[in-house]
Image 1 (cartoon, rainbow, N blue to C red):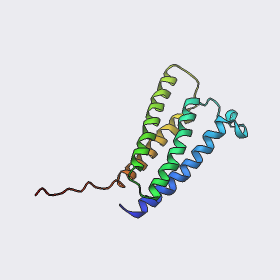
Image 2 (cartoon, helix red, strand yellow):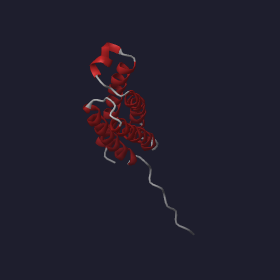
Image 3 (cartoon, helix red, strand yellow):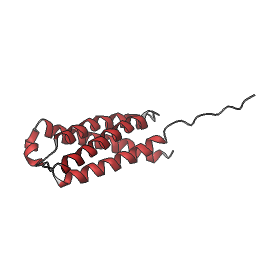
Length: 133
């Protein structure tokens, strides 16, 4: 795998994780009046994103150390985000309040996490095949 891909993924997942934790934590704990600024936020989406922030930081460490488990941890994030996105669609279909930016943010987060996952899959060591004697 190209070293630049891993370096990018390491840095991106670390920064994305920190920003995600800060943004989610600010809403959850109402730091800096973020709840009011966010408008009609959907609390379960905020919590899912907050949890994924920790996963991105763990993935960053995995990228840095080129660990094969990095793709697994990002699979967990993808699962959380997919279930949350489905929940958000149900929330919206029940005409509950939400912000349109939440749809864009969730879609973007899913795509970015998928991109990180694709890079992480390349960290997995190829299975060695032995010839039978």
